[in-house]
Length: 257
Image (cartoon, rainbow, N blue to C red; front, top):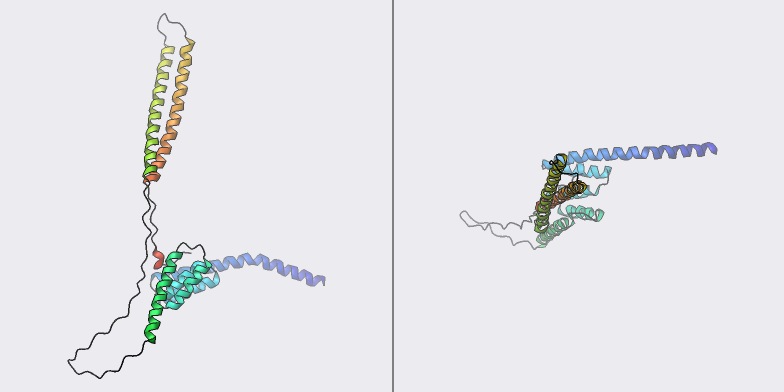
């Protein structure tokens, strides 16, 4: 009984120790399958890409693979399968950033599937007598084409108030630096005068105190000027910078892993 219990505990320990390694191996294999799938997808080899994305998902259940599988089905014309995997992707990714775009794809594919189903259910046209040479034969009407286009978000809003506030602070910072420099210069001049007193003058402690006051005030103004200038420069840069628009390329591409 004790031997059996010991063997059971040893087996559980070995299994728990091997689990992380197995998980890492599965993720590595999934990444390799994903890279193969991406190469196939970029080469418009939809069937091999579909097989490799499916293999990657079996190895590592990353929800983005479901979106990629749906993309391959859509490229292959498997509209109902594409709808199924788009829905599975949204179900497994509640906070998907491209949810609205995927829902639009589903809606368009459903419209196309419904149109094809209605066309199949339509009664066949009556048989016509063969026409002779030189007769005018009407051209067949092509079915409607469902075109899926990627949409781009609106341009980011301008931020003039932030930019103007930055310019104002930058100007105040420069002014503070100028005032601080002037006070430091006045303190330096006063120090020179004290070190080389004119003939017949006596030592005046109040002038020494005034020199130190000027020097301290100059240092303080320079510190304030630097802080205002740096803050103003940052605000001006942020106010002028516009974030790069996020192109909605997922309507034609795949999700990166």
